[in-house]
Image 1 (cartoon, rainbow, N blue to C red):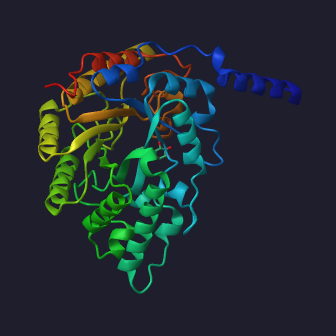
Image 2: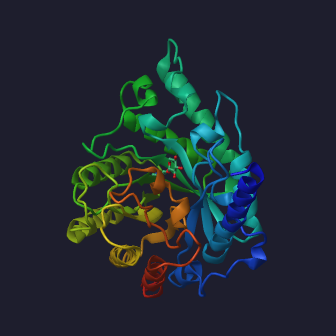
Length: 386
Ligand code: XIL
């Protein structure tokens, strides 16, 4: 093919992917998911990503994606832009440019922004400089200095403009239910709880009015028993020590194929065990949030329509249960359109087709999952009921 023609085709494809003006984009259905959530005293939101450096623009560069979020959401959360590796890519060098762009856009459209996350307590997710950092002769105080500087700097930078923070993400090992060790916990004498206490206390001091959240992915599918038990034990210890934690963020990456050993089709999920888990959490006085909702259809066989139906039914049952808790506040999806979902980069489907885990499809059309979320929100008991 001659280069001019190739270029013309590429431009055509780009134009189709990113329609020229927002005005030419279809409006999202009314009432919006956020309007429906508001009726129950909640908000609906989504993650929005600007894309990894060098890997394209991400969802935020796509006017169609922005239009869907503006139409449906009352709040957003940066998909990656507030994580340690973005905000402090080199020791002592802070970069808030990407998060600021998202916050500016959210504010201009009347949306709030929550913060994710101050400490991703998982060995895999630190920037390389942290993993290879020389903690010196007094490792505990060096670890404390790094943690408090980071949390204090980031929290104070945004102050009241971010009213809810995932202070700690994923500290419990899903396979064993034990606490994960990180470079910081090792430097602090092998006591991961000390890292959590320090993080929450530092955040509380920096932004006293902010909702402070422990966020994790324990779920209702079989195979999550140890993870749930471990999170419960952690939440009990945090309460006992008076660590300032207001809420449990239930990530809610539900469905099939998220974890090794997951069943290849949906269910059977254990509603009883999940309710007992949520009862214990709320019984300790914690609020709940859904922070990263999506439905992995990796294991569902069938055409798009059959998969969409199964995803929607599964989501409806899950959301109905979650919404029966008055302690449940904001609900955020981890992406609004299938093509932008992080799950496309995770292990794929046996038939090689893209996954369909989000409320909108790759063409920006609402799916049965969007209707299921709307129905669950519309019929949810108000969290402020007498
Ligand atoms: C994911 C992002 O979506 C990806 O872009 C990134 O490469 C890895 O992290 N649980 C979390 C989120 O708490 O931060 C993760 O986000 C998804 C799982």
